Image 1 (cartoon, rainbow, N blue to C red):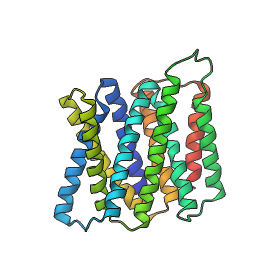
Image 2: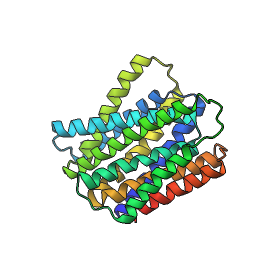
Image 3: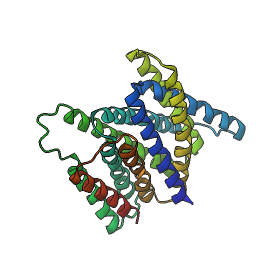
Image 4: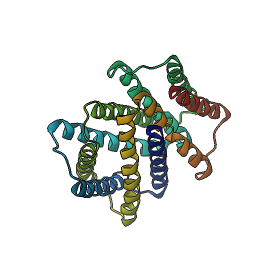
Length: 278
């Protein structure tokens, strides 16, 4: 059952990444979309908790949940900006390599066993990332370095987020409490950021953010269930397969084209992810 939950998370995260890519093309504010996304998710989780009962939220829960929310917003914003600098069909697989960080933490910090096949998968993903990033004959393309920097920031943000989610599960913190603190903390961070940036607000951003918020609630609820009942070193790679949704969307919906060596890099990256879940 927990594998199915991880697959649901994979699908929801992939759809949200596609929406972020689509919204970038529409010129929507990345901060505003997430502001509405977190606001909708925060209100809905509060309403759900009101009817089902909310357990006592202590300082540890508030800090971990709040950090998860902030890191998720930072990661999503960096990912959206990376979409502006490069194709979604390459950006998403590279960012999905962040699963290496929580996988290693599961073994080194939480003493989960990682098999030889999973280690091979990790190495394949890292090698594939190098192949995908290889860009001969760029002629000084100024977009290349900003693209890589955005990807690196997103990888670190999502990687640490994964560690904190595993920590929450390890400490047996109620997932609803974590979600409330996560969405509340992320919304507060985005509210401050929006006041600083002072971008123009659009009504369509609220609708888009609301849809993302619904997918996020489903995805993260399934994510916590999978971590609480399954093996984290397997859950993380399955969730990172969300890049499959974006790769297909980038090629079919956005008509992006990949070079032959990049296709090989994407395929081997996905193969490495599969190896880590065996």
